[in-house]
Length: 143
Image 1: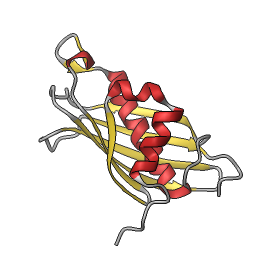
Image 2: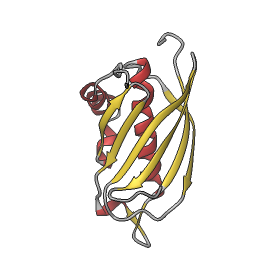
Image 3: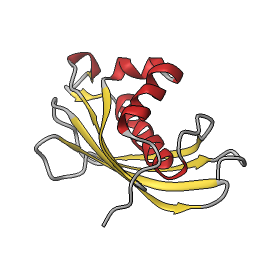
């Protein structure tokens, strides 16, 4: 059974709206949140397309980072200064021009660092579009 998140979806969305207002341009949302797990979505917008009819790499990576931020906060609570220190994205398949779904999970949570992964798929598809691993720095007073 999943443990409850230390931050609610509403609290997370409110934090993003006030502290990271540029994120609303991407049309992201978190749909599910448990301790160490988050499911995010980027609502499709034709402006996210690049030549060749694929979603842009920066938009894909941004959804991965957004989802991992939710994963980390689900374990440590509302800590605005938890920041990405590393993000690696492997693009695996051309995404379809539909919503992009992201499933993030924590792999290791330490006192100062959190490491996790995000699996990204086109809505309605099973194959991975991209695989992201990310490390977050956690401020020393948050745990």
